[in-house]
Amino acid sequence: MAYTSLVTGGAGFIGAHVTNYLIDQMGHDVIVLDDLSGGFEENIHAKAIFIKGSITDQQVVQQIFAQYNIDYVYHLAAYAAEGLSHFIKRFNYTNNLIGSVNLINESVKQKVKCFVFTSSIAVYGANQLPMKEDMIPQPEDPYGVAKLAVEQDLATTLAMFGLNYIIFRPHNVYGEYQNIGDKYRNVVGIFMNQLMQGNQLTIFGDGSQTRAFSYIGDVAPCIATSVTIDNAYNEVFNVGGDQDFTVNELATSVMKAMGMEEDIRYLPPRNEVRHAYADHTKAKRVFSMDESPFTPLQEGLNRMAEWAKSVGVKKSQKFENIEIEENLPSVWLED
Image (cartoon, rainbow, N blue to C red; front, side, top):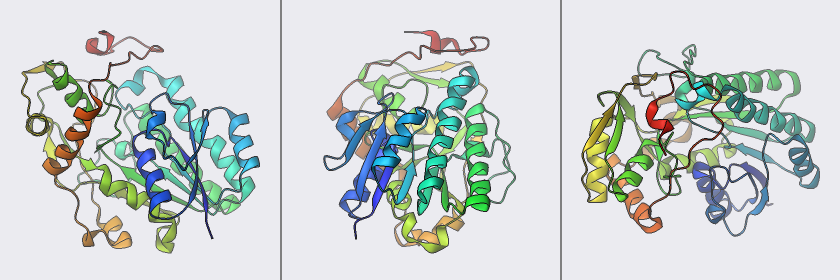
């Protein structure tokens, strides 16, 4: 029996990889819903049914559920710019919260078997380290607030309507298909695009802030196969790399992977969580992840660098709908 899965954001970075795995490894029929605001049609698997539209368009979402008998929803569509989210509150909540509710409502009505949601470690805020799933979330930016609200809504929806869910909190995922032309998010892609343009690498603050970076080839299969694991249902999982690096160390590793060197331009620090890395004990236990160790950072960067060179420089697009300009980093106003 072939299952039918709806993947939102399937033209984007993580969504495209999840779609590929669902089709090539699991034999699912996949419908991709994407408005192409951050993804690219060429990322979509040839066997997927592509519908261009937004999760914020309630009518489009309703039509998809009316037309197709959907077994699983993989909700990966989001505008995941934590730093920028302070300045685009309405846009952030419309896309990341209201759009999610549109999908949840229709999933309840059609009695979807499981709703898989990619949240973020942004829900933790400046919490104790390493971040663990049983901590009380304390998000420090509107993006994290929106993600946490969807998590909480899924919990209440389970209690009221019985909609099963699986929540993933991935962090700093990088790899092939990442939108390297987005100057507001995805630091690895930003660095690679800057290097190919012969520009300085830009770092907010002194570069000593730390993150654990996660290669997409390790994360996407975990998300895709989660619906086949009973113990994953109605649980929350951190998923990603274990080892944290400073942003300065990342810059050095990216330059090595690209075979290019440029100076670093240090910018005034922005309002962000300084250190963020998570504990993955729960995911390793439930998904048997110890059997396939995560890709080392340099190896993953080398793979992404090869892909980035093949696609070439991407022009950075300026976000045109800034709602608040007060305290906006000046570099984001540059063309």
